[in-house]
Length: 354
Image 1: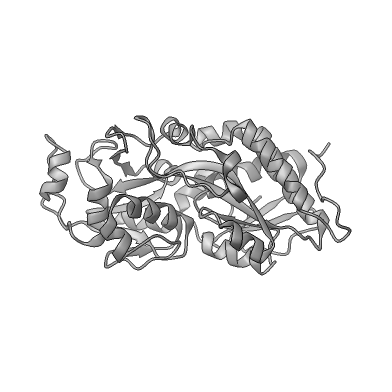
Image 2: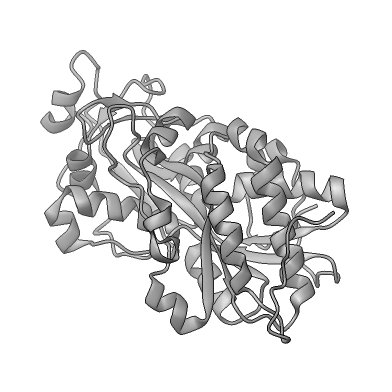
């Protein structure tokens, strides 16, 4: 059973069978992690299945990528999780290794009466203008031009954004910065940015909640949160000019040409990839661990969990529209785990647990 410090939506909790509580001291065999909310739904599912199979708990604090980076840097958890990959120099500075564990998509969701999921079309320039405060009404000509035949209301737009440091913020702002120079100049890309207005929600769950209860809202969240909360997602125009829907197929299309082998320290971004079927705001979620481990048994338990997830978690990932890492990447990742050593200098992980 997973226990979290973060308050989660009741509907999400019911969907995943996760009991709320306060994280306590993990037992010797338990695994402690903290970080990104983007992969929370699949980590919850994986941990539930792993607990049933092995009896080992994976206690994960869904506190955002910024918090996860801080906690792993401070060595208060066995692993951190971030949707913003750290650059090789930063990894070296803090004695960390990272790898991609899962891929998924950030999607735009709206709260507009009469608009069905996938009915509204947007593009990067228009979304950037909304979050810059330049487009303030849903019937603005820029939106209307993309949505011929759709009855757009004369209603104020309420942009909802992340209030905490998060990898979802990074993926979203990295995408908009690559599309719109003004957005790049005035807001930029980072885990935490200053938006000129709108409403701030903590975590993917906070943005989902605010969007749900705010008439005229638009927000950006991880796809599984949109699915579980039955939010109205939009189509988005990709680099090839096609309007695509967010789902596992469009996330896979965006990830298809990713060359992880050439990515130093697995530093690779998947936004605005070419291909007519590619979802433009696709991203990977990364795990961070220290190279030097004072408690090798804890590190070994964590790596056993992630190995199990790679090899047995694909079906659960697909059910939530995440994209599993391809076998070639898994092999490269597990080779990189040889860098993680105990006090004796020997690798803490030598292959799957028997």
